[in-house]
Image (cartoon, helix red, strand yellow):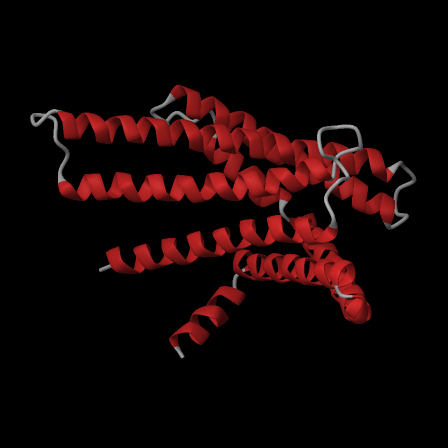
Length: 241
């Protein structure tokens, strides 16, 4: 019952519902892609699952029409990252926020073009939005890699010298953050693989992924995101009075 209550609580929030829809959509694409390619007698089932996946993806695209304001508020609150200790992480975050902020209107224009609301070339706008997403992912990968490196250096330094040894609670917090950065790195790498696939052909492996591989990368990223969210909620409940 606790798991059911947790699921119901997650579905009441926009982010929780988006994670579930994303995971379900990619899982349908993964299974549907495998059935279409490997199981001729299950071709119809696979095709239906791919259709469900496409509709869930479209659902998320429509819901993102309302994400601009939330992203703007976050970007404004972060500002120039004055509270960030590491200047490299600060500038990576600033550029990443700009890329994320620009991503939404570009995707909106692409969606509106597909819906015949605007008479523009949707392919160009989809490419631009995908490129911005890929840039954001690359910056996130660099940020996580750099943060992990700095944390590892601090942990090694505290172990090597007795005088600068960290308190156990602080060391555990650093180790937990490092684990979180590892998960974020893996999630971003999986998403980046798909982002490159959706770019115009001729760019690296663009257009070469079969549907099941796109579904696999997306499923990995989605499950890692769900795990991190559940883990963060668990830690918040554990520290709350």
